[in-house]
Image (cartoon, rainbow over all chains, first blue to last red; front, side, top):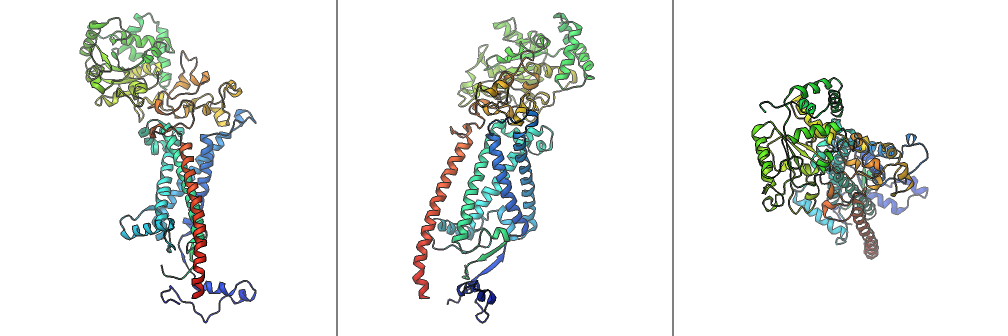
Length: 258
Length: 364
């Protein structure tokens, strides 16, 4: 047995006795428990934001798609009593406004929360060691490393993805979204006072519609990569992934140091 | 002419009755979004203040602005403007031609130095030293600079003067340039549209005469009273949009019923103008009422926004002949394929690792 382990099992203690006697835990299970460690990473506001954000993005993609390419025309009532497009747009606007508030709250939590709550908002490009870890992680994804390293928060590559796709991407969608909303809200309204300058800057708002639409695809591509990477890492890495975003606790599958 | 006559005097001399004159004042007040209390104010200004002289110059354009103008909704609007400009300088509408016309321009600039309004229809091309548009033997850009020097304010009349319009569409071979990018030291009121609505012109001039100031402009320099809302916001077909009732194909049943033209590429949701309220040809109709979507002619670079008949338009800005969905789906397809491949290799690799690890772990 190598000496450089995070912790050594206390062999005198026999854990999970009742579970073993009941036939639930095997001998291998018990030995596995002796090796595992865990750390609390994501506080509840971070986790709540993650899932709320995910749900809102789904609503926004669905309703946004239907705004650009509406459902086939329907005629189940007089136009006065039928509000199909109206409800679609309401869903989009309401979800967008909630997303904005949630993102603002998330920024607040980055200030008052723990160290890991800030990881989303910066990329430590000034750290040489961080770049080395990015390189290592790239090699792991290119199948050039046998084994990944352990990380408490995001791995460096994930941090880059989070920063560009989420922090920058969501900010872009919030800003362009509010500028488009200002069009309907009208000149002099507070969405217009906040974001109308973007309309002035772009000139023709058809351009704004197009880039907002492209932004949706940017987020869709992020979702694909994010979900794939989370599940893959959950299976193949040496630590928990999916459950960490539910419980906040990162568990490690072995007790080797790095 | 020792004294500059008033608008009222000009109108009366053209055979317009006082009753019609008052009608013009109230219509203009309504168009400007002013209450009835402002009608006498406008009337008084038009009766007492010296007429605003207008010099109207033409650059690269098609004269559709002038054509729109002389067919304005209220006949009086036309009379007012024709009275304003025929007395001064407009090389299309004035009687004089050639050297006489050029002399009239110089006379007007001299006489009303610092007081006249310069209306610019069309824009100057800047490539080849402006040789693509010659007026009176000189590049138009020189006439524009010359006339602008002593103007009180400039009205960029139409999409050409405001944004460049078709001659400035990509690749813009003559480098047609909107007025505000050539003249930077004068207040400029943009009245975009291809053509713009005539009432906007008379409204702006009447406003300036009555209140001695420029009308309130939006971020892009357009009068707020005419350009603060989208066609979509005041469209009479809007209830069908909200209900989700669209024209699905030209001449289908929904088109006959007058449903929303959104799916046919109507640019009403991105176009700021007063067409859906003021309308055209004596208030008879406007494009959407005639069954065709808005093409967004009063918007910056509307020729370069892909098809008039697509809702999700091609991204010509990026030099790609594809719309956001095609670009996005292609990118998502590539990423999806990459993920599938990566997942397959990952599975193989971990299977390989398991078999390699087995004898090693048995040794320990």
